[in-house]
Each structure stands twice: as C-alpha cells, then as structure tokens.
Image 1 (cartoon, rainbow, N blue to C red):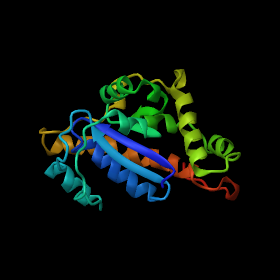
Image 2: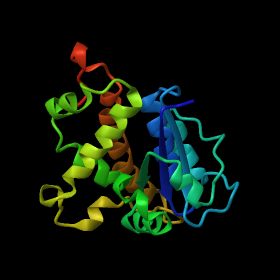
Image 3: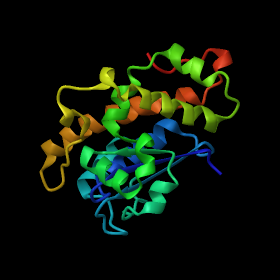
Length: 206
C-alpha cells in the first residue's frame, strides 16, 4: 500500500491533469511510496486523453494508453494527501466540495512556486526527526503551506493557472505544456527530497 496519495485535477481530465499525473509518476518513480491519480470537475467517465495530449505524452516518453477520465467526487478528495489543481477555479471547487482539505490543496504552479521558497536546510530540519516516509511527506506539504503568507504572494494571480488548450490548437497545447511540465518537475523534486534519508545528506533541490 503506497504511503502518500496525490490527486491532480482539471476540467475534463483529458489534457492537463492526466499529463501532470503521468509526469509526476515518471519523476517520482516510487509506486511503493506514491499513489498518483487524476480527475476532472466535469469529466466524462471513461474518456480518453485528447489526441494532442496523447501525442505530447508519447513525445515525453510517457504512455497515455491506460488513462480513462474520472468525474471528481468527494471520496477522491478525501483520500488524497496532496491535491494539485490546474487552475484557481479548480482549487476553489475542490475546497468547496471538501473544505477540510484546504491546507493540502494547491494549484500545480502555486505548489511549485511556494516550494522554491524553501531551502534545502529547511527541508532537512523538517524531515530529520521523522521516522517514516509518510510523516516526512506530510510534513513537507505543511511546510509548503506555511509559505502562503505575504512572501508567497504573486503580482498576477493568473500565473498560478495552467492554460486550458482544449480545442485551441497546437500553439496553446505548447503553451500549456510549457507551464505545466516545469511546475510538475519542480514539485516532484521537493517530494523526492522528502523520501530521502537526511542522514546521508541527499539533496534534490538546487
């Protein structure tokens, strides 16, 4: 049974959230530790990724063939330890459904941005006293939450969103990926660091 569950959420669960799911699964690469899934706020259950999104996944060396869209329901939110929404609107919908999950619900770009404010030493001090991987991951998410204050504010709130390219052509798919992929990678780096043994001085963030 994996220690830590991550849920990614967009609208139709056919472009942004499944691409994020696939990238995180590839970069975290620890099925014994991480359970990673996705859902959509108005998804059609069983829908495939769009051909454009599937093509992007394949170009990244990821396999989109197993993906089937899921409509977001409360149990998916309840069971998640970290929820990464692809826009502020999705984040609001998630928190409206399950208000108690507000502290573990971020937009993907928000989580990556706040994670960048955390130093390696802070991560090490946070996880060093903790004995289990789950405890460390939960503590790291709490640490990211503390950066939501004044220091974590941005001038343009929309910069925490990933643009929706649905039916908007190749250029918009490219723009969406350029926002999504780095944020997923940066988020994965911080989460990976929490799974390392701090006593051996492992460092992931730079």
